[in-house]
Image (cartoon, rainbow, N blue to C red; front, side, top):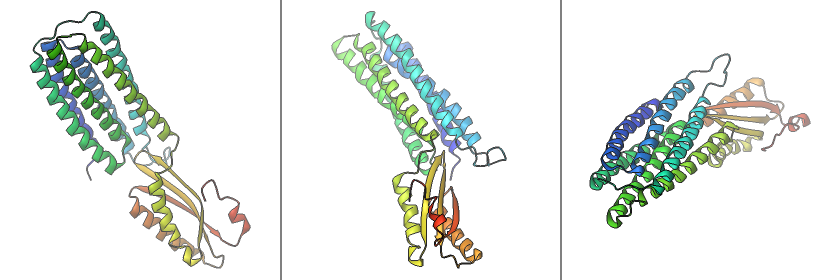
Length: 297
């Protein structure tokens, strides 16, 4: 399994390549839409650098001050990226509005179409790679970067369409209008990412499908007379934390109960690699054992 920072480096290289292509395209054509795309990509490069730092910090092992690890550092990266996306969109918005009232003729439109088309191919291929890695490594930083790249890809395709329309109609005002629409779409992407980051920071539970996988493991032991309650889960970056109580017959020895807990915890970790499982053993006959069932039972 590759280090998630490997994919961030790929994203940074892709961003540098597309910035060069798009800035050259802007200077050759004078298109505000191409400049908007280049500015957005510059933000993506900065965000990727922040993501690299966050992943480096998140990969540090637990210590005395952070016994549950540092994986939440990833949320700082995605949060900063969200804000940067919105700021870049506002800059594009101001520039586009100004150009709507003073449109100018575009030059070398065929070259602009070619360069932006190449950029969109780079965006799409890199986003696809990062989405796959984000799912496999369960990294919100990689997911945020992939979403940003995918947004850039759609922006680039929109720019291509806009330049083609300007070329066919001769209406130069279409270019800044397109830049305005691009800015609004980028703001939407930034707000959605910011909402997701906030949700994850509030100790969001594991997805329903993963919770069912865990509960199916627990249900397989109920034939032995065991009960389970106080089931809780939370996500912190790439790590999952799972807590629940195991109720066993009171006559069991401590060793037997301990062995059972170890067996169940191992099965869960095998099902959800990288998860942290904490169990609490209680006698099923004791009424006090049922006073702490929690919100999920």
